[in-house]
Each structure stands twice: as structure tokens, then as C-alpha cells.
Image (cartoon, rainbow, N blue to C red; front, side):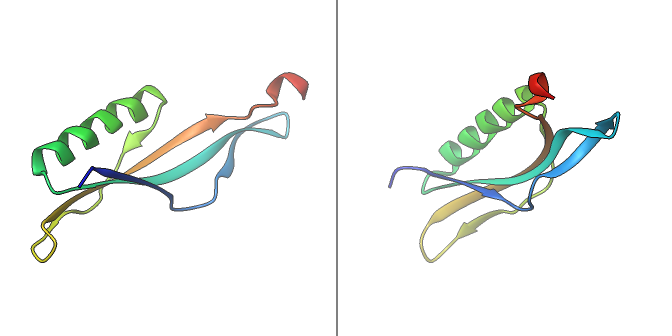
Length: 92
């Protein structure tokens, strides 16, 4: 079984950081899960995803890390919160 990566937005992006009554950023919350039958691969992929998210300004929160005995699948789910700037700031 190849690893699976699931990206799940846990909340709608919320307008944040205002200037002159105009919102500048979206506050976002995502859960990114890695599922595989290899514990080491699951953890390594999750750590690489964490580095990528950090480079985009997202900070890691908590999330479940579990193993399903019945299926033999490891799941590492991590939550990330961060801000994304609006794409249309140049035209405001």
C-alpha cells in the first residue's frame, strides 16, 4: 500500500489582520494526515510536510497519532494554523 496524504480544512478561512478597514489575511486551520503500513515512512512524511508548512508560515498543533491493529495502518494526523495573504492586495 502506497502512503496516502489527506488534507482536510477544519474551518473556513477567516478574515484577519485589518488595515484601513480592509482585511489582509485569511486565518486557516488544516489537518494533514499521513496513512501507511510503514510506521517509519508515515512519520518521515509527516515531518517533511511539517517543514513545508513551516516555510509557508503555518504552526503545528496537536493531532492523533495511532495504529489500527485490524488493518495494520499507521496514521499520523497533524493540525496546522497559519495566515495566507489575499491574492488581490495589489488591486485594492
